[in-house]
Structure formats: structure tokens, C-alpha cells
Amino acid sequence: MAVTTGPQDVLSAARSARQMLTDALSPGEVRGSQEEWAQALGELQAVIDTATAAQDAAIVRLAAIEPEVLDDGEVIDTPRALGHVALDASAIVSGVLAVTAVHAERRVRAAVRLAADGPEGTATETGLRGLHEAMGAGRLDAYRASVVATELEEAPAEVAASVIAGLHEYFGSEDGPRLRRRVRRMLARISPDLLRQRAVRARSECRLERWVGEPGVDTWHGTFPSEEAAQAWAAIDALAQQYVTDGVCEPVDRARAKALTDLVAGNATIDVQVVHTIAADAPTGPTPASEAGASEGAPGDLVEVTGLRPGEPTLVSRAWLDRASAPLLPTDTTPTRAGRAAPRPRGKPAKSPAPCDPLTGALLDLAGALTTDAYRPGKALVALVKARDGHCRFPGCHVAARFCDLDHVTPWPTGPTSAANLVCLCRRHHRIKQRPGWRAVLHPDATLTWTDPTGRNRTTHPVDHLHRAVLPDTGTDPAPVISKPRLVTPDGPHSTLEYHLEHTLGPPPARPHPRCRIDHHHPTAAGAHLTYTATAPPCRAPSPTAEPDPPF
Image 1 (tube, rainbow, N blue to C red):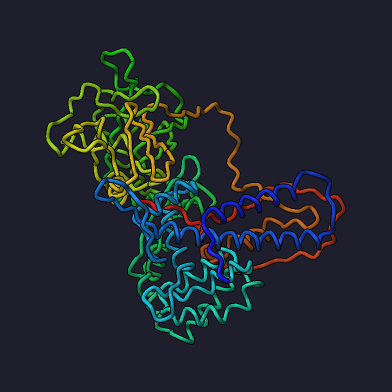
Image 2 (image 1 turned 180 degrees about the vertical axis):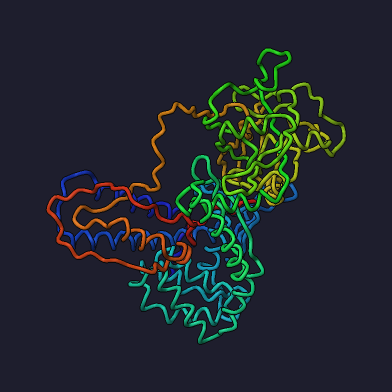
């Protein structure tokens, strides 16, 4: 007899399971053996895997519901077939799971591929049902399932189903990289053209991406055709080795980073425009450009600025900022010790300080001078709104403002074409805003509150152009140490060389196949505690399942 399970049944079961696990792990003394706790750990992982499979099933059912507006204006939910994805499904998921818009879209797509595999021979068949069933049985976690699913992205459904059937015996024992290798070997035997097509596509989609990394630095991630990358790397490495020899910087990894930026920027003309800001309620009157929004400090100070990356503040040296603020520098390059031209910003004349909201730091059009009666805003108003917002103002979306539409929050002509009624929205979220059940309110301080069809409220904020951080150079900075603390066990600590061989000499973690693995077989000391020791840092490349949101 089939039992129909509704959302309330799932909700009740999830809450009961969560409470039982919380009670079972209440604080107390350590009891039991290593073997028993290892079994408990494995069973908890099985619970996580099963819950993830159930969560995918819930996402599939949420995505299949489309709102329908009746003739009398009433909005009702209309279920569609499993596998249908409503336009605003990922937007709702991003609010529930508190993830970015891009991550939510990936999650919805992955859930549909795994949990909405259609009947054999139909257009909705993906062949990945076996992965979802293995997760539901607690034998496969979401990471390893995504590794296999990614490898089978372009495989026909029948090929994918055959490969997964051949992997079942390994789901409980092998890690992601090993499963990836098995999938590729099986595909090479079943359909070698698939692997070649992937290589051809990857070479045609080479790109360079950038996003904010540690404070004061950006992270770049690029893919290039192998032969072109080899030539470029040779040029970068040669200049880096010269920098190390001449004492410009070290170690060679840092020298390569400097060599790359010098080679690129040294062959370009760079114009930098510095806009000083001031609180809207500050005393009026002419302010010298050298003092507007800035205070005196040492050249070694680190100052937070916006504009180097859309919507994201970053730290730069005051010496660089002072050079960029100087009007019309005569040159844009300066020689380095290696004799090669290094980039130097060429400034433009400073303008009057831009007024900002005292609390949020949002750029303002105080007198409404940029407001127009027309539907389309003028260039100056477009520039102001895009600089104020920085990126799409939908919660969790980071599409840069230059790629966004300017949307009237209150539709024109009821709402004016002004900074107080315009926001940046990417095309997808522009359409979602017009769906039934969605509401947006732009407040005077430029914060934007969203209400989704489930009644959940979220608020997004403009770029803070006013309240910047300044990290002064007090002369007490320690000497740079090219290492980081890492966690080791005192009974078998890895040496710096061993750790470096294991973690930094292999390919990036996106394909984690270390070239060297060192195992220790030391007796465990009784009562050992975890300690920290300094050693070389691991690579920081993105992983396949916890990918950073692609920059725009």
C-alpha cells in the first residue's frame, strides 16, 4: 500500500531527528572505544547523506510549483511534472538555505538531475537515478555524487546509467578522485568521443576570472590552452627568477605573481580616477581634494577603497592611493630593479566630494538634479546608480552593475526616474521581481527590502563609499613569514618538506591527485593534544563542489 508523504510529514520527521541527535550528543564525559565512535561517525554521515537526498527531493517538488493568477486576481499554486523548474525557484531556495543566487541555481539544477530522473526513454531521463538512490541509502555523500554527475554531464542517459551501475560497489569505500578516475576509464571504453568533446569544449572556453581573496589581495583563476600556457609560464618564470636574483622579492611564488602583473600592466596605459566622498550632513563649502574624504597618514598605511572590483571594498597601500590622487602624473610607469617598467597609475583631476548617506555610505543625488520625466535615465543618473549599487541588488546575487538593467522599483510613470526609485537588477532577477508574490521596497538610505512568495524578508545594502577602514603603519609589523600555522598531531608531525610534498606539489584541489603521499606509523602518545606549528600553506584553488561564485 503506497503512502503519500506531504511537506508537513517531512517537516515533522526532520525536526524529530534533529532533536534526537541533539539529545544524544549532549555534553558529558568521553565514553566508548575508538571503534564505537568510528561506527557512530559513519552512521551520522549516512544520516547526512540520506537527509541530503531528501532535501534534493524537496527542492525538486518546490521547483515544480508555478504560481497562477486567476481572473479575479487570486494567486494559486499549480503543481507541474517533476523536473519542471519555475523561474523563481532558485531565488526562493537561496533565501531558505542562505546561499548566493548562483549557488542556489546550481543546487536546484543538481537536485533536478539526480532526484527527477524521468522514465527510461523519455526526454527527462538523465540516467543519474542511481546516485540519488545511493545517497538515500546513506552510501554516497553529496560531494562524491557531484563528482560523478559532473563527469557524466554530457553522457547520454543510457551511458550514464551503465557507468553508475558499474560504480555501485565502490560508493561505500572510494573517495571522489578515485571515483572520477573510474568514471573516465569507463567512459574511455564505452564512448571515447565524449572525453575528446570535453577537451575540445574546455579549450574553447578558456577564461580568466577574479574575485576577492584574503584582505588586500585578489584571487585569479584561469584556464588556458596548454601550449599557450607553457609559453606564458616560461616568460613569467624567467622574469620571476630575475626578481629573486636581484632581490626585488622572494620567494619565487611571490615573484611570479609580481612578474605576471608587471608583464601585463607594463604594456598598457592605466588611467585611475579617484572620487572622494563626504557625508551628506557634513558642513558645506569647498574642500581641498587632498583632504576630502582622506586623512594624512604614512605611505605604508592600508586604506579601504571601493571601485577596484564592482561592489567589493579592498585594501590598497596609501602610497599607491596618493599617486593615483595626484592630478595628471607625467608618466605611467616607473623602473624596477630588474630594469623593466612596472605599472604606475596615471591620475585624473579630482572632482568635488560626492555626498553619501551618513549611515549606509550610499551615493546620493541630494538635489534630485539627475531626475528626469522620461522613462530612460540619463548617463549621469545611470553612472550614479551603478556606482551606488555595485552589483545586482537581489539578495545573494553578485552580477556586476555594468551587466545589469536599471529597474524602476515602483513602475514608471507611477514611480519617477530618479536615484530614489532605480536599482540595478540582472536580467533574471528583473524578471523574477515581476512574478506574482514578489515585492521590493527601496528605502531613502538606499537599502532594498525583498519579500518572496513564502513571506520571507531579506534586505540588501548599497556599496558603502563613506565608512572606510584604515590600517595604520605603526612600524611594528613583524617581518614577513612565508608560512602559515597548520594543525598537526604531536605523535607524528609532518615536517615542512613532507607537508609541502603532500599539499602543494600536486595538481590543484579541483583535481586532487597529490604526486607524493607520506604516511606515518608512529604509536599514539597517551593524552596527546593538538598543537600548531608553522609550515608552508596549502594551495587555495577552488574545489569542484564548493566552487566560488563565478565573478562577473
